[in-house]
Image (cartoon, rainbow, N blue to C red; front, side, top):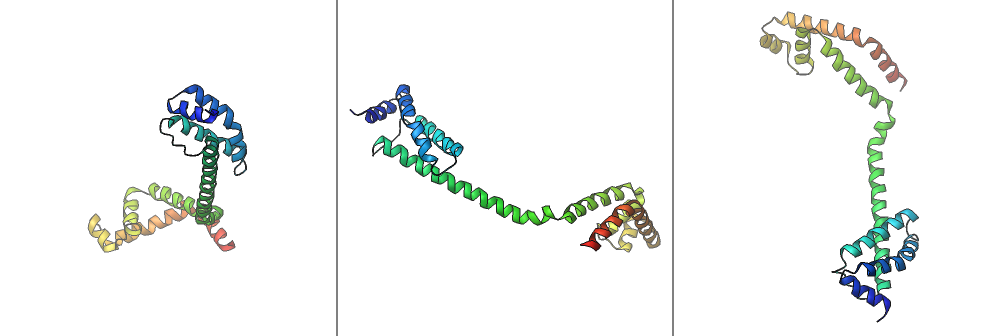
Length: 187
């Protein structure tokens, strides 16, 4: 019986020594073969995964050709699959970069997020009655009459609170808004 046939036979029976012989005989040549398709480290990873697959499935291996042909054909297919997987990942990264690239490279993207955060902080710092009225008006899209009715105050009081809120916000955001206006003017 030829050595490869004996290895296959012994592998089916779970002989660890047969697996070790297979590994010692074919590991390096398979890595060298796979490195024709992939980088050395990727090729080695493909072969290691394949060798692990062989041991995990040793009872169910169906090898209809020679052992050598089976091993090299399997490693070639796994190498080509790795190439396709890497290309897919690269295309995915490219698409993600295209979608996010403009935002990443646009300083106004960060500026607008920062401005939104500063506005939130400034609104939270308003006196409670002003803040409630302002939020209902600007964020809740309520009319002055609806706010007056809801809060049990006059429409003039609502208008006064909104006016005062805007003055306070302009004061607390003045440095930031000035910078924002300059950047918008320059772009």
